[in-house]
Length: 231
Image (cartoon, rainbow, N blue to C red):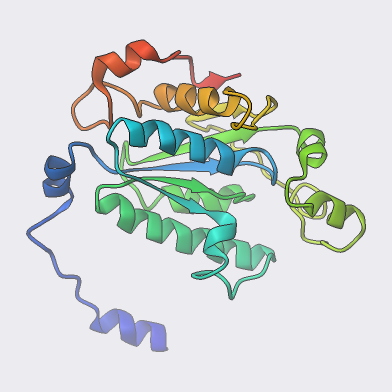
């Protein structure tokens, strides 16, 4: 009842300074790059490396990280299927606003269910959203276990742990697949940065076309541009 009343009273306002104006000001279009994969697969590390590379090219970026948004915006949500769906919905809506502002937004979120990811993608138009699957076997994720989650799940303390107590639904048609089995310690190795840059090139983030972010032909020449599946 209250939702219908609020919807009836809401009239969106159109502003003169729109996305196209911000593109002209910032020099690149906004985009959402949605990284999905198991806990410990390397989403945050790869997003961090990609943002560093884009930042060096003068691209305006932001990362919406799953754990970070749960300390504020989504701190009222748990890990049931319903709460996970709401988590994805809120992050997608924030990502949409940030993309409209002209930012290239990386979302590093487990987002285990296809339907939730498809709903998120449905908020965006053509060329505004990229789904990137970080394909890392659960055995590798459990061995890394950077946050101790797999150990807690094995001890029976995390019944809703994705990959252990809850299923992860692999994307059927992601725009980019990054294999996350290498060493992602960017303090000692370049694997994560290489994968992020190569994945960004495969996704068109470093392309020279007008309206696509960053770098121009010189940047492409410096990168190892690979197909949409990146080892």
